[in-house]
Amino acid sequence: MIVVAGEALIDLVPQRAAGDRTDSATPAPLLPRLGGGPFNTAVALGRLGSPAAFCSRISEDVFGDMLMEGLRAAGVDTSLVQRGHEPTTLAVAALGPDGSAGFGFYAEGSADRLFELPHALPPEVRALALGTCALVLEPGASAYEALLRRESSRGVFTLLDPNIRPAVIPDADAYRTRFTGWLPSVTLLKLSVDDAEWLGGVPAEWTARGPSAVVLTRGAEGLSVWTADGTEVSVPAAEVSVVDTIGAGDAVNAALLHALATRDALSPAGVVGLGSSGWREILTFAAESAAEVCARAGA
Image 1 (tube, rainbow, N blue to C red):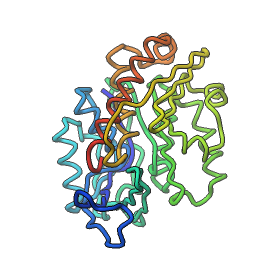
Image 2: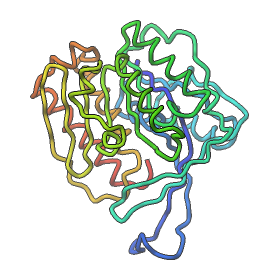
Image 3: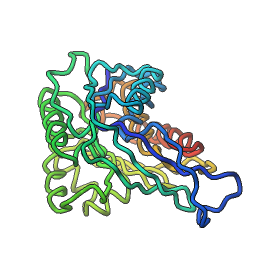
Image 4: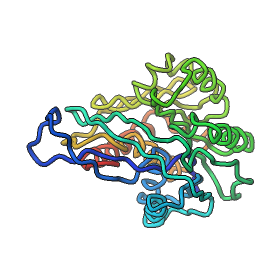
């Protein structure tokens, strides 16, 4: 089983009719879509056929019920989900001409911020994935950080996707310091070029601090990986007519974990042992998965 921990929320996505310009002065209606980086990753894992569980705190409101149903429909185990009466976090998406998305968040007092550290995860757990706002917004962020450190210390493979949202990070320098402190507990670090620029680091520097591999997504330029033993591989992006990029990075997370699991490579030695040919296959699969998401509205 692969456990994904972090927020589940509702994306409010602009819906324009065919032919409408993205810079039109007329506001597009906002349609609710199930979302949140960790939620999307868990759903994608379920759709790929990997045994997956979601670990979070989800509201008992109507949106929360929709999110729970979305997890179950994808075959994701929800036994680790905590429920609360607080409202669901909302993320309002703003789409650029190329389909890229920026977000404004309504997260004050929301259910997922009150996540509490669960008891030991089931013994069949092989990997844990975390990231995004869950590791920023307190008090839940400290509980997710404790989960990362605890599970890593007992040998669970860990994937970290920081998925930087500057609007929700109150102290950039403090976050960068925390990020560096997480690296010894991370097996696979996956981030975008925008994340890397904001964090101010490079893959070789990060692998030296703990991760066995760093995967960098470069949008239309494709994906690259650097491993601790010096392997470096890049693949092009898959061709696609982009509707929007919402959830593309989350699909990459799921594709990486699914591909590693099918190769019995969810370990530091397994990651390094893939070599150039193995990583090229995995990155190509991840690029195709991201393209599939970019062809549809929302995550």
